[in-house]
Length: 218
Image (cartoon, rainbow, N blue to C red):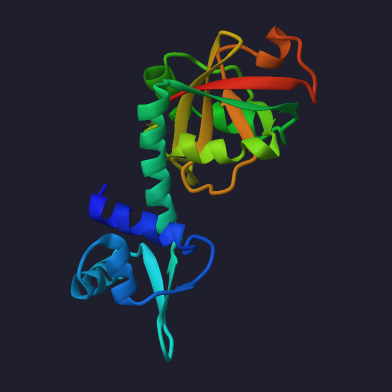
């Protein structure tokens, strides 16, 4: 992470640029960053070139807003600080048991995935995913998880059909070792798809709507 970018983004976010465009001159930003107007102007151009902010040149004063890429950089920094100060190696995510569409079993049983699950996660998964609908107030925790390294499960092609990359995050549910799997290209997630060496639903006698806690390793 480039600290000079992270520092500038923090200042802009505190001024409101996370949610909307803010009007700010190079001199004003320089005062916030404790640098000259010329250096602040250069920093703005660097942030624009790297895709961290977008700028609208108004008639009187420029308007700046942090881009999704800039938000992601800040989330990564937040995750690092959280791990430093909370000194934790896991994150608890709360939700309720939910039924899936039945497609999970088809995908995870593909040999191209199965071999990697065994090699990289240390277990062969039960045929089917265990699904957890995350409580709305817990959604933000997914960003924390996704900003950790994760384990890449490489995509492959089988009989002319492409299967994409999947990122796995080791976890546990009531001492059952498992993993959350997320397609690399997915964005918004409110359902956790979980694989485990056994049927979590049967083993723990769970039904749809039952509260469940997922302990994710960071």
